[in-house]
Image (spheres, rainbow, N blue to C red):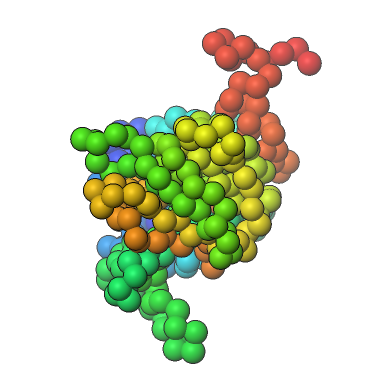
Length: 335
């Protein structure tokens, strides 16, 4: 892997992540890399600015934070096919991140100098993870804004009519998600329920009355979808989880559909029953009855750098969810 240009993205509001970013940037610059450091959070999106300033994507994005910081980087870097290397610095569960110890030298652990050399020598694995995209159809033929508004390195496919690539890696009118899209009632002053109709590949499947609906990737199956009682999918499986949130019908169950499925979601009911669409926990847009949201597999997968020589998804689940030990003490069984 070339490390001529590296972006260091650290979690907003974390002093530990900011300190680690300064230290890591110094080490990378000393090894000959051009490094840009930026903060990322719900109120800070560094990617459009970095692309506009530098004109081309980096060779690698290093994320210092938790899963939320990784989600933001994946949404912007997946369309540009830039690999992401993540470390849990200031995060919580860290399903998508490496242990921060890999960034420090110790007697039994290589330090960051060895880490960057290892990357340059291609001694790592690359994991491709499915992304989702959502397109909003208001029924009026007017394109809706997507994740970004400034064009950079855009390409228009006139034959297929595909959207322009934007400066944040999204496409005009298209929202991207690494974990999930979910629909929740928009207004607090009315009953916190909504009525959503689901269509799969042109066929109406169900109407969900309840707190909302989650459409998740295998990566997102351990997030909101799992909290709502959905299944856990191995990230090596390309599939889509459709999971209702607190449905009022006992027959409404989570389903798993093939990755090439095209899902349409329609809010139903009175005009004041608006529904908000969220992407990876960030607000995307608001839908009114009569609008349609079309969700399907995104064109590109997120590229995640793996450093573990024998990675195990099940070991990650066991450690993060305390499957093999006490939930309070976090102690593993002797087996």
